Every structure is written in C-alpha cells, then in structure tokens.
Length: 270
Image (cartoon, rainbow, N blue to C red; front, side):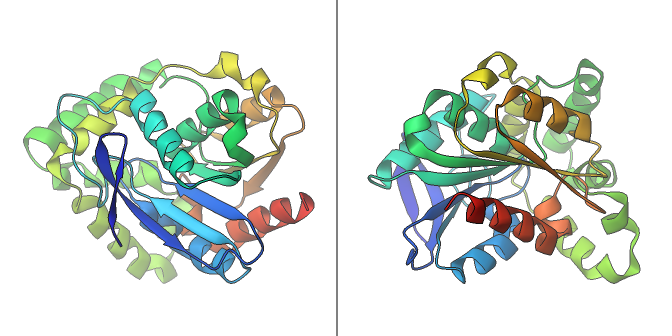
C-alpha cells in the first residue's frame, strides 16, 4: 500500500473494504507496533461492509522516520487530523489502542466534527505515572544505544497479559509478535519519548460528546482497568467493556471478544 503525504511526512495507510454500509472505521495503533495489530479487526469489519483504514504513526511501522529527539503526542494528533481531513466529508468511527487512544481522546475533545464515535482500547487520559518514567527511560536508552533484544523480556510483559504469555497454544503468536517487536527501527526511541513525556488530557474529557466505547483487558498492567474506569466516569454516556484474559494488546490477544464488543457498540448507534 502507498505512503501517503500527510502533514509534512509520509504515513503508511492501509485503506480497504467496500464501505457499502456508508461507514468508515479508522484504526490507530499502540506504541512499538503498527496497523498490523488490527489485522483481525480489519478482516472482520470489512466483511460487514465497513471501509477500514489502518495507518502507521510517523516514525513507526512502515511510515517515514522523524528527525530530532521526540515524536510528541501532539504531533501524532496533528497527523491524525490531517489524515481524517484528507478522507473527505463524513465522520468516521475512530478506534485507538494505547498511544492511538491518546490520539482518539484529543480528536474527540477538539475535533468532534471529524468523529461519528470513539473506541478506546487500553489507554489513559493521564500522564505517564511517575513511578514508570525512570524504568521506561532506562529501557528506552538500552534499546537506543545497544539493542532492543536486551530489553524484549521486559517489554513483552508490559504489552501482553499473563494468558497470552503463558498459554502453550499461543506460542506461535508470541514468536510472531516478539519478532515484530525486535523489528522496530532503532529510532523508535523518539516515539517512546513522546509517550513518556505526554501531558494529561483529563481536563478535556468533559468536552467529549460523541458516542464512546472504552475497552480494557483485565490483565492490562500498562494502563490498568482503573484508568479505563476513570475515563468512563468522565465521558457522559460512555460504556466500558472488560476483556477477560487480555493485557495491553487486546486486539491481538482476544480478537474475537474485541470484535464482538465493537460490533455491538456500532450496531447500537444505527
């Protein structure tokens, strides 16, 4: 698929599905991954007549790299705005996981004209907890100056829950996603800096008025379920779904349950 000029860079954009039902879902991925983490969702919702768009953030996946020390969340948000505006008239359902959720929250609060609904997965409206910052900066430095392979055993338990990491029947999946983790370019540290240094958006949550679904894995230790509960309490009319046996990457760990939650939510909007 092509690299699309967006906001002074080129983003990898996968645009598939007939859109025969007149609706579009845009998927925004989590840190260290790419739009590939939504493969199961793309296949499912294409089959239901949705136009499905998954894109890679600048400096990640197959999108162009970014110079400097940091890719800020505000810059990634600006990229999302430019991407959605390029799609033409019509609001979209925007699904963001973790880092993608940081983007989704900003879109819903600041550009309601672009969204028909918001779907959050494993995300937070809060800044990075102080107790995490030192650890994450250390892991980031090792990955930048030495090798991601030296910290992979620390990163995988952040990204996935116990069931995914320990179940014998998920061994192949673990190998696949470990390989994708190790395949990150060394400059990924810039995106990590953006996540670590992000500012809170809690004060903007009461402005969100679009229909909102919040999904969280019950085994998520990176953005614990309590954070999802706080978002749900701050957005009027929003709903919360917990996914059993899922950690911080529920779209990969429990794709059928995630698909069912999103499908039920979108059906309720018709």
